Length: 130
Image 1 (spheres, rainbow, N blue to C red):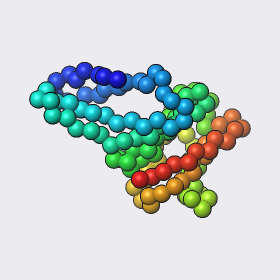
Image 2: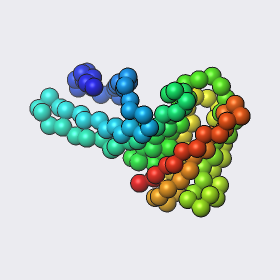
Image 3: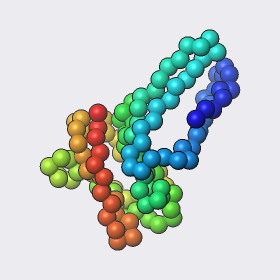
């Protein structure tokens, strides 16, 4: 997709674009910012995975060292658990609103398991921190 820029600014400008037709499973995204002089820069790549018909999604932002969990439904997520590759619980919390962030700066790069508990169901995801 394409979003036109607003030009030069001394204020923070926010842009958004929704992927209306994501592929099933994991989708990878990055931004390309093109300047007026045709110079361009790419952002880091993020992986976004949707489940529950898009009601819960997550992505890892390697630049900010954060795992972001979003939910669009109104049902509460009773527990968020993050386990290392051996199954050891290293993080647990409740989701207080529709956005939850887990700081990953102190975690080693590698495989992790994210588990969400919502309405008596468990949803498990494999996460790669890189």
